[in-house]
Length: 233
Image (cartoon, rainbow, N blue to C red):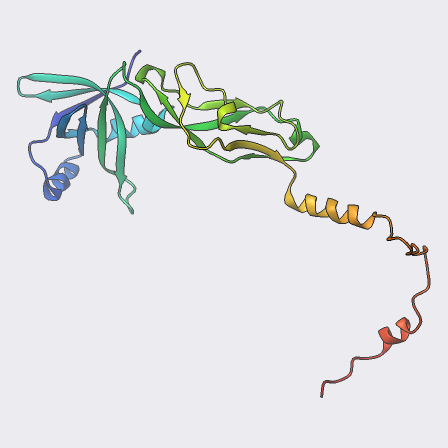
């Protein structure tokens, strides 16, 4: 599998002051860790990392990290585990890489995407994606862009659990409780109207005569309606 290449350089110094100078020079301070190795400070091109994070796999993109050093370069596969963004400028401030390899599974969160229009929606129901992402275990070459679900067959009041989702080959779900990920339900307002209509159409209680159509109001009702409300004492 071809992985996007991210070129980096060793960062000899640590600390906020040096990291600030690195950003002023147009670079992004970073660190790489994993597989029992100590954290290694780096500098990378922020534009490259933005390209990775806005790509089809976003933060789940496995990259080939090429680290320049005095006597050559080191290469490894890595994934961006965390990144920091300036709260005002919205520019990248730092990122952490984790070393991965093609033979070891890792846990990542993958978005859920739907295609089609469910049968329930055709009769007025609403499709609700209860979970926007799901945790999966997979190896680096098998990282999916998303879990794509065709919702066309879903009927009214049907749901798809986490275990029902179509996971791509090489991936398996990770969850503690098997929850509903996608549901097809009538809107709440319509449910209330249906219940009220059903209640209004209910048969009268035993011994109670149904109201006649156009029946006259009860004695004194008209007078009470016309009389002004008395002032409180």
